[in-house]
Length: 336
Image (cartoon, rainbow, N blue to C red; front, top):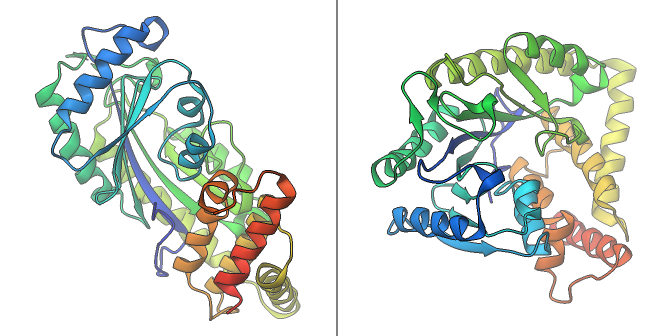
């Protein structure tokens, strides 16, 4: 998953862009009343619709597993989807950064995630696959309400557009709560990196639309572009205002974080996120020049607990073993 592989530019505050469509089959009840047999039928119908489109299928049952947790860390699936015990499946097309959760809250959750500020591009890809859904399946749609969804807040377009932003300067200045409050007044919301209920760790936040009824997909995306531009400008102004003694103290913090990631013997995921945030800000400010956004972004995903466990030849069975494996990976990647 390459959603952190953005390049540095004037919108280097934006880590990734996502478009997600919620769709349901007309002939089946919503998730709350859907039987296991009904779920299996939906899975087969959706899988059949995407045949020949380059998607690989993953079937789940029995609740939360390490494999599922890794897919959550990579943002392919939600935590709720990972924890489900009834039949549910995932389709992934890595070449187009598209995935389809089948039988999550809605029968179909189609999403595309691209690196950087690329909402329009993500929308184009998602729309291509949504057209396949519309032409192959009988989707629940009402002329007045639009797409019918399990949760009324998704009625209408059924689309959630979001961007993941890195906002360390705004976080340090204590302005995040004010920004979140302002966003809620115009139909947008700010959450942590894993969506609803998650924290904004490491200065990373997800900004998305709340309103899907009475507004077009294009207008939603335009609104997000406008707001992201404003937040990006605020963050960059704050960064450029760090001077003198404050800059020297920040330089010390950044270089200490670099040293820890390169040479620590043990490293928890929480510690990694803290130092990741410091180093990424250091790259943006020119304090660190020998680590790229791409390298740091890949490391972010690879050091997450479940993904790290799956990647190790001798899977770490305890937190201490995982912390040593995480530190070793950071050392081998950055300490060259």
